Length: 566
Image (tube, rainbow, N blue to C red; front, side, top):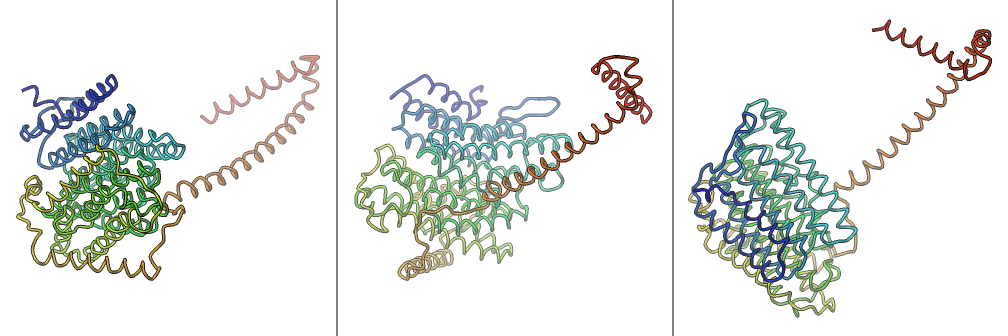
């Protein structure tokens, strides 16, 4: 019975400790065994509360299982296994330990039954993942990691403040439906929104993920935002504000992704776009919509991981990731090319690929609940996804022009990891009932009716036609070596500049006031010294003693004045 009570994060944390003291093949075997054994263990555990205790009159539940947490638990184990296989060629202890702790922190968060436990793992997600950015060991990765850590810790501090207020107001720390009813609920909502990359709080993602290591970006794409999506699905289903926030998230990254040159940054913007679909589904709040949101989260972990792995393979083998410097790689990296295309087809929601069977649920729910304008925005976003992730990523990396680079396919372990992800994308797309059986609600949804298939096929066909036409006419944004300004420009340039100017003015005023005060004080002291010259002569023949007597008088007068006003 005691085995049942071991939360899934424990094996990963123990594994991280073992990794510190092992090397070579033994380390690889242990890292592979942990997610497999933990997943099998989780599969056999029934739903319910398996660990709880009292802390200052509050019930803490570090291990609670239900259908919602199980879905994320399964996909996090899959992501951990694929990421570990992808990184087997590494001999970097810092990356491997960080990856194990990071995956364990994600699992701890989704099985947390109370807000305090959630907060602990919320912060652990930040502190363990930042080393996957710093492990690249460049100046850019260091400063990007620092900015990432500041934003993530800020999210945790806001969550802690909201948790304290929530506990005081409701006399409970249970992590269930919260809603937007007061200050505490809004603070928790904002904390979730930061980690979910809401508009204007999203730049930590597009700033840090492209600066992570090749394998680090794969892990990062799987856990942080998906934990936030899980938290929103748990605490705020049916919150209409999320519908509009999510719709904005699906649309605005498209414009940045289309003009971005760094292909991993394109994927970072694409990640925000896909999370937007999930946020919309949670905001709608119906059984179909929530099912669609969490199913899309499950699929996104896999197909976005596949795309990050394929671009990571390109970076690993060529040392380059800008679209302007790549092209023609299909000739010498054919396996990576095919696997990348599978990921591109999945994120674009081609029929028979995983994205189609989950994204259509959210869009159908939007129409059913009367969110017609939101449905149009999601339709536009779907076309945009096909442009920047479905076409741009494989086209500019492998086909656009011959860059002259003749790199081979990556090491076998990287190919195996990508193949597993590609196989899952196809398996879920062909047999979606395997995924639907894990969803929180039973809806009997069928994605392969004539309307869905025809509408999506037309959308993809005309989107491809638009890309070809724009490209032939020279109107499609070219891949240029440039830095595109996003909202982070406000807090990285505008705010520091404004604060610097403001404090410059403050210091100038301060210096002027202090100078004028000294002048007035000296004049006053000179006047007092002249009036008391006879007294000074009686008391002392030397200046310091007379000055001391004068200051004693001043202090005494001040003391009497303060005593009077009190």
